Image (tube, rainbow, N blue to C red; front, top):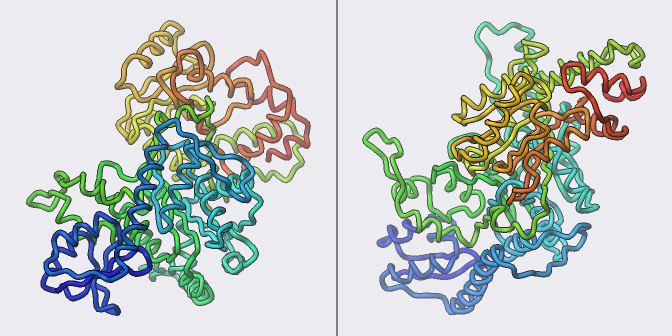
Length: 584
């Protein structure tokens, strides 16, 4: 006879069912040796399945109370999810939050808090998932449920979180970010902050040993000494930070959660070792047409909800003779199972809530190799008193941020291009939006179109050499042909054209003129546009790109400038020596 009870409010415990373990396994049952029983995530659907399929089943005396509370909880979650697509206004006070969330964001926060254990927020890009995570953490803190919050994010977004935290709250934070091992140890061990922000790579390096430093063939004595020093530092970090690794965080959020979509990657395995009372995964792309990717992310949010990887594959994935995935089955079952732990809103669902333009600033962190070369370009040992030298240095630094090989062909990778690809894949490839992409440089446009070709995206291109008549023709093609994904070009397409079929403006780099930046946005944000326009800006941190906004944009708007190769030099020569020094 099988016996069912509920423990911790969110786990079903099934005893004495060895002869019926297939029934338990079909809904993700896990054998717990310490309990001497099977466990399953507690949802009403899971409980009903067990009661319908187990033979001679008994239940604990307090089961009706648990069922009543869980039924009420899941009903509330259903209502909140549906309310996100309606005109129903809700009230929510978030202690410590300085700006009021939009209605759909309040509903997202209420959904997370109501769940109380874990949630995947899969809202479309631009709908403020970061803000919802911050607000959820603050509510949990106000209820005495959280005294700390760990945020794990890609390196390209690590410095976006502090900007958002400072915008919405006065809570203290620490960014785990230093090339010095002792500094990072000290950052992890701080106790005077609420938010701890770390990128995936440093999380693995500091808490899980990072990459294995193996001896290389024909290794020199110098290389051996360096490797041994690095290994010693890693071992020391692991030893000192052992308690941090074993810590049960009150609140844990992973940003761009598709980073753990691969079951077998070291990153995925180690992130899932993190313990937390509440887990939140944020991603606009929870799966790229592959059900197994969703399974991996849900294993972080609600371990065991969809069963083991092996059993999930057996039940939901069809393969050919060679084991290649050919299709999926019982998809509605998966959808039903994840519902209490999943919420997704698209911009079209919440248009009434949104302003007419949303800005997404992507702060890009240069790789160590990029940083070394960039610093050498910016460091000329002068105070920008030599106008010509300073102007050239500033322009070269800006071009280096775009694509390092333009300036130094020894640097093959580009942190900005990696971040740009991620946005393209989410916005265009996965969610089907049309976008217009700007760069100040024709050379950069030549590089961007190669990326579009690699991703299989269809595009049109406008630069200074495109005839005026052809530009008008391309405007019509872009707005009427649904198969065209992108319009890309220099600022030759920033005036006089109408691209209202697009609802994303992606600035790969900034123009020096605020007026031209506004004109870029106005290509889509104009009469005839029925959707909210999202403007995505890529900005390399601690570079000329970031400083442009505080120096150039503080000047009077530049009007009647002639577009062309000399534009940058004309603008820069309007700056004083101190301004140019600040840019460098």
